[in-house]
Amino acid sequence: MFSEKLNLGRSGEEEALDFLIKNGYKIIARNYRTRLGEVDIIASDRDTFCFVEVKARRTSRCGTPAEAVSRIKQNQISKAALQFIKDKGLWGKKARFDVVSVTYSGGSVKSDLIKNAFELDARFSI
Image (spheres, rainbow, N blue to C red):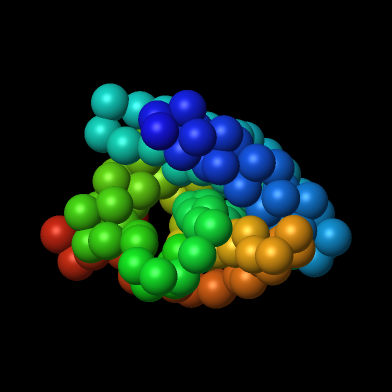
């Protein structure tokens, strides 16, 4: 079961990468990890840095993939994004949080992009 979820996550990230590139994003980093959290994909969309969470599902029985990005997960992504901004000296640059949901169904793949999927929690500051 765990390896199935891992394989689904990996293939979802590959689909999301292709989808983002086809939509004009430039990939900067993948699987950026800190002790505070992780960001699946960091990319730029024109002059904006995008911190992208990828969620993949085989069914929407338990909700859409994007609905699985909980408040706790959003906080972890936010903390990791702030660390990236600090490490790279990107203070003052435009940034946002996007979600790519990948759904595998009936032999087909559907990817959806939600720009500005969530805001930086007010407890954190740039």
